[in-house]
Image (cartoon, rainbow, N blue to C red; front, side, top):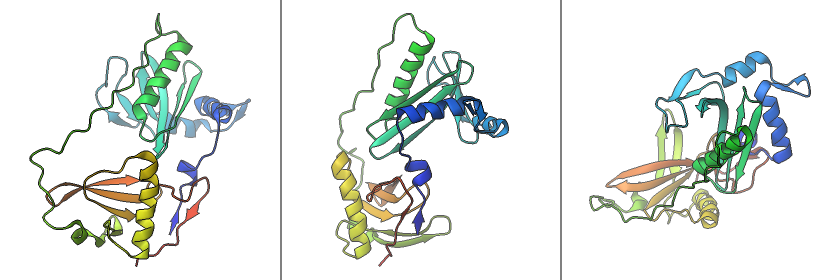
Length: 254
């Protein structure tokens, strides 16, 4: 099965090229050449649905979503943006169409949406002189890991009993592996997670089931035990073989 991640998740670029991209997506024009037709640019950046129906704080407005970009107001300035994240990398590309300003932020770490947004906002502050004094760059404090709630009920069966193949009309066929599964498919899946978890120190302590699920927006699934026989399903893209071009997986469930 092919996993087409080259477009959304395999972009190899740099600050210079991304600055050119920011200029192009701002107005759809770069070096007096129309790169993005006006109709396409309008549909992608105009809001057709409400994604956040109440402001998160006094600095931002409500947020809408078009056909590819989010749109809101920051301190009264119109901002069009989109973020992205894979294990190990987080990005945020923003442009302010009325101010002719664009901002690109890269971070070495997955799931860093709040820090990269804070950084982008501080850059906008400086570019547009929105504050008399630069506001401090406040990073959210890491919360201490708390023990499981007393009401959490353990698994009624061994986690191995929940491994196996499941089928659903919407999600298709899923083969979940337990830590002790020994098929070649499960060895590959466990190896994929182990490589990424070891680099990020992100493996949960609770019992879990693992599966490969190659899709456009995910490559693997982790099911983490919550309470009783309930698992929390987490979708992720691991890229154990690297990325930057279309990767074709030939693994077969066994």
